[in-house]
Length: 236
Length: 122
Image 1: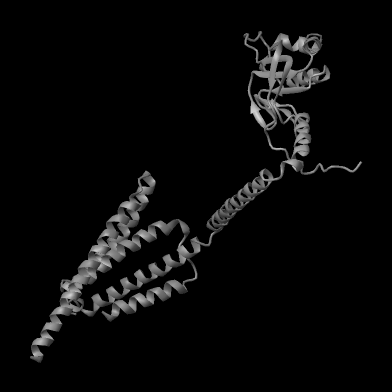
Image 2: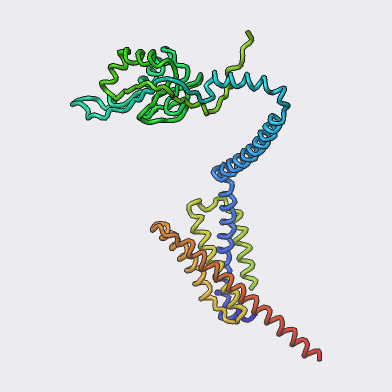
């Protein structure tokens, strides 16, 4: 090749060699750097997480298929064997609060204070607190209510009602004011229990608490997950 | 020509044997500087095939391209403008163009040498 030797004393060849050496050094350093980058913890963690997500998605799919298969089997069971069990199940479901019910009862509405605060009144006094809701539910329950719901959450054996900042967490879901407590039970007894209670009377001065009897009240069923991981049936 | 190969091999060996690696923060700049350098290398090879190779042009082009690409990337990072991609595109495009030209030149040369051979054998 003419080109490479043209324009050139040996000095230029030397410069060319040195430049090429620098280039080669840069290349190998970059390759080493990139291979090291791929081995950093962050990248590896990302790979592990991706793997875990993929595996979980696959497992979900398998479990879904299992559910479908089992449901198919349940649906194809002979009705003679299933009917008595289904009856028992329906009763148990109603007792556990898994089915919607209706009947006469009382609807209580607890609302954060709408009036302007008095001078020097702490803002916490204007809010409906979890104790208020808990107390109302306890009162209704004690007065003979057989089904209670709070803002669309059925009151069941695992129900929790707890403060979550400006909201109240009921059955693990946050709800804001107003809180509507519906109770199916003897209306007169429920109303008396509420109106005679000194706590409810007191809180009514701070926030808005209203209640009225209904001749036909619908209380929805519990729709959350029912999982008793720790509580196993005891032998009697 | 041999000096190029010797230099490259020596550089690669030196880079591999070097006890330290370039810091992580330089990875981006080094990569773009390398790309610029590679562009100049292919440009140089093309010029060599065309018989227009001038060492001064080659060396100065290689150094300034690499340094400027690195600096521009740095500036882009400071400004929040990803100039990295602009450099990537520009140099990548030119590399492929140069490769195409090199291929053409080689093929032309091959065809010419064959026809010469053919004529001499006649």
